[in-house]
Amino acid sequence: MFDTPDESEILRLAMDHIADIGPYSAEASYLEADGDLVPSPRNRKSHALAVDRRVRELAGQDGPVTVPGRPWGQALGLRGLEELHGYLVVTARSRPTEAQRSLLATLVRHTAAALSVAVAHRRRREEALELHRLKEERAALQRQLIAVVAELAYQRAVHALMADVAAAGSGEEAVTCALHKLTGLPALVEDRFGRLRSWTGPDRPDPYPEPDPVRQDELLHAVAREAGPVQIKDRLITLVRPHGEILGMLALVDPQGEADEHTVLALEQAATSLALELAHLRNLAEVELRLHRELADDLLAGTDATSAYARSEAVGHDLHRSHYIVVVQWADRTADDSFAQIVGRVASAVGMRSLLTRRSDHVVLVADDRPHARALYEALALETGTPSGTIGVSAPCDSPDDIPQRYQEAQRALEVRRHSRKRYGMTFFEELGLYRILGPGNDYRELEAFVHEWLGQLIDYDARHQAVMVETLARYFDCGGNYDETAASLAIHRSTLRYRLQRIRDISGNDLANVEDRLNLQVATRVWKIVLGGSG
Image (cartoon, rainbow, N blue to C red; front, top):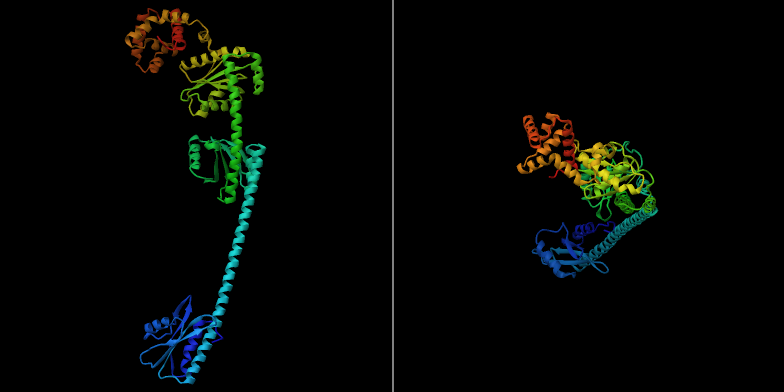
């Protein structure tokens, strides 16, 4: 029994040898486990419930056990120095002698001693296992602590690096450079419209693809819905949006999806630094834009040259050069700050240096050189996605004192273009010809008298009959006297046009075939349409 550490095996050996020391039978045995007595599988099935109940009633003491057909029975506790290890239940066919009881007591003591040794071995094994578990747990906690310390150190390093970048004010390129060094992935910054501002790392597309406004808006909304960086195709993207306003997009090119939590942390810290940088640049741009606008507003309203030159130098604009006033109006765009920013950005892209301001329905550029005949209009049409825009350009002005008058010239050029057959495009005041004398500054009373003299009867007729005789005549002249083109532009039949022109001759008493009448009528219709706004 002392050679085995198995407690169940010890009980088996004891039960197997009970019969060798007297008239005994091993009725049952029990092992103590966690305060309970667990019966051995070798226990006899007959009378098992009664024996089990009796053993538990003894509560650790020795005592008699009654089993039918057995005149003698005893439950013997298997005790160690301080605890009960189990029970051995022994019955006999006849009452044992004193010597036989002594042998049984010896067997019980040896069994209890062997159990004490086995229990001690088992507890040492359990303690060793527990100690090993605790060591493993401590090692795991140490590894976790080391990882946390390393993580915190990495976070502090990333935060310190990005804080230094932000404090240096080196711009987007410094941010993408730092992010590329931290992650090993190509880093890039795009503005909110999808145009590249900075790229650090290999594999930069050349040329960089032009953004699609619709897809760009969908991309921004998809990223904005998430709480952190988002993997979209081959890029891990986060938005740069201080105070909720999207100023741009920071991304890592990660086609294999290798970004881990450290990469995400670096990207988020870089986005925070970039937000500070872009917000600062935005504030500077707004201050500069406000100063430019205030100067442009004063120049258009009229200001003294000395003050104008000093203020223009302060904002970095050379007002000593010859300037042109450019007025921009787009049919489907209000002249708000957003449209003004588009006009300013496009003007810079086509090489125009200018001061910019806006009015309720148009944007004004005070440009230091003559604009290209088509570049600004075509670039704005591409940027806005529609050609429905009109641009008027003044004659050159060599002094700030001339700017208010040149502003009126640019407006006149825009109005003439808007009321012409091809209403969209760019018109220079110098190219207006006859229409230059119809601009602001002339005597409107004389112009109204002239219109009344040549068109008064037609205007009155239209007012009485809700007709469009004056408009028909104006469109006829606009189309160069071409019947088919005029009829098509008015959406009427050719015979209807012939009828109207005959009625015009009858009502006005003027002959369209007469050179003088034709010239005066054409000028009158242009004055009526452009200067007087087509009013009665």
